Length: 307
Image 1 (cartoon, one colour):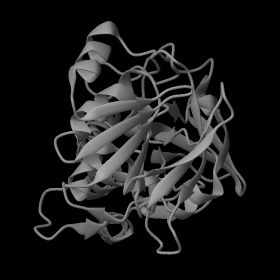
Image 2: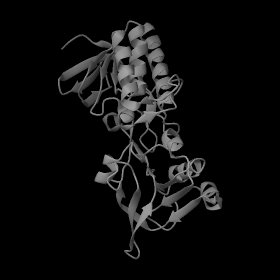
Image 3: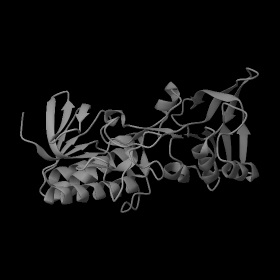
């Protein structure tokens, strides 16, 4: 088994790659284990127009390729593959991958969170072509168009309300006849003339009419069995996120939803283990905030090793 690495970063989205850049520039020779979804959620995003510095926008995969190349230029080592087990009970920490065990003096967790999806083939096919899981990322692209939001919790109602800034109309599609969202969020939505509701409805498919871009969605009423097509140009799926934290169960402190709890920057409850990005942030979930927290984790790891 080789000597312990100064820094091992698990995950390769904006948070992990920013942490890699900063720790590499600090001559800590970080190892990045990229994970099954290398590059994170931006790899299934088309145009990114809200990342500073790109006047004309940038394609999600291109942004991640640039981040990866920049970190590698300063000496970050990238390995493909997935972590199957982590032991944080003793030092050095032990990280098991398909290629064996890696020892680490510090660990930066940047495993992200996965948006829950409806599980439709058409949803995957049209992701980034009218289907989105992030209103603040993509709402701007739907100016002057009718769109739908699927879900009934706070995030769905918040996204529907936000999207009325751009869309001609927003239809909220929900499987039940009442919303789960907080009373204040519901009141806002009910009072908004640009929001209507399809109650007791499930999405059977998302249609593109052969155009490769969303043209509508096929719904079924769960009470009556009636089916209908709702013409929309965009579908936002807002049924929640799942933080990728199962590896750390029983080792790192989490909130009731499974997000890692950090304090005083990016510190977890285990000294020498830091967390950044969507794995610990269920509020903002933006590439820029993930990158910022990756910087924080890197600086915290650097200080930890220095002391």
